[in-house]
Length: 321
Image (tube, rainbow, N blue to C red; front, side):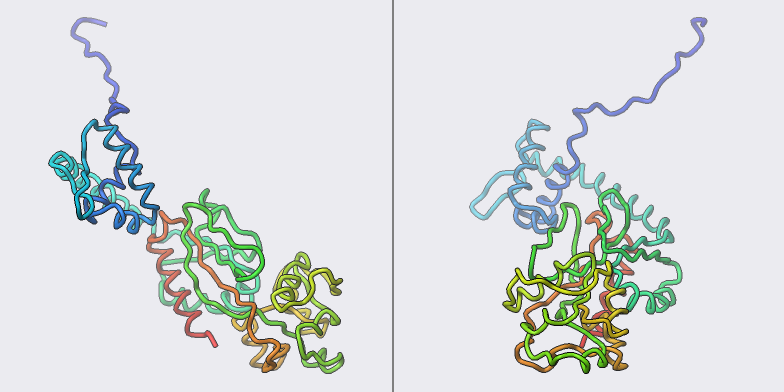
C-alpha cells in the first residue's frame, strides 16, 4: 500500500451512550405531547409508575432534569423542551417510515387462528363478504383450540371464546384484546334425542343425559358448577376433541353439546338443534362467554389487521340475537 492509497473506511455506529432505550424515549415523548405522566400512561397503555421509571431512566441517561413537578402536575424544563423538540422530529420520522412500510406490505395475508366452532359454522361462510369488501387483503384461517404465540408471529390474529366462569383468562403482555361479543353458553340437542329421553327441567337433570365433550369434561363441569350442580359427579358421554365435532354429534342425536347462539344459529333456525332449557327459569343465563380478538399491540393498527378486525366486529354485532 502506497502513501497515496486511501485507507478503507468502515461505517461507524452511533455510540451506545448516544442511543437511550427507545421505551424511555417514547415515554418522555408521550409526557411532552400529552402534558402529564398519567395521560401518557393512558395513551401508551402502561401503568403510570412505569412511565415515571422511564422518565428517570432518560434523565439519568442524559444527565439533565427534563421534567419537573408543579402544583398542577408535571411540566418540561427548558432543557426538556429543547430535547423534546429535537427527538420529536426523529420519532415522527420513525413512525412515518414504519407506516409507509406497513402500507407496502398491506397485501400480505392475515394469518388467523380461530376456535373451530366459529371457523366452521360461521366464519368461513362469510369470508367472501370480507374479500369482496377488501379485495387487496387475503386471509388464511386455521381452525384450532390452541392459541398461537402471537409475540413470535406464529399468527397475526387469534379469535378465542372465553367463558366468564371457571379459570380466568390471562392476556399475555404485549397483546391487545377486543371483545367481539358476549353470548350465553347453551346446551343444544336434536329434537329426536330430547323426545326419546327424560324431560330436562333444570340443569340438575343434565348429568343424567349423554353429554358431548371436547378434549375433556372440564367445559361441562364448569358449566354445571355455574348452575350449582356438584362438581364431583360422574359425567357420561364421548370425548370428541373439538366443538364442531360435538355439534355434528348433537345433530345426529348422540347427546347434548355446549354451544352459543352465534355458532348454533343456523341449526336452531332450521330446527336441526334445540336449545335445552329454553324459556325455563332454572336456565336463566349464568354462563356467559366472550368472543375475543387478540393481536400484538404493536401490530394492532396494521391496515390489514385493522380492516379485518373492524369487519369481523361489525359482522358479528349485526347477527347477535
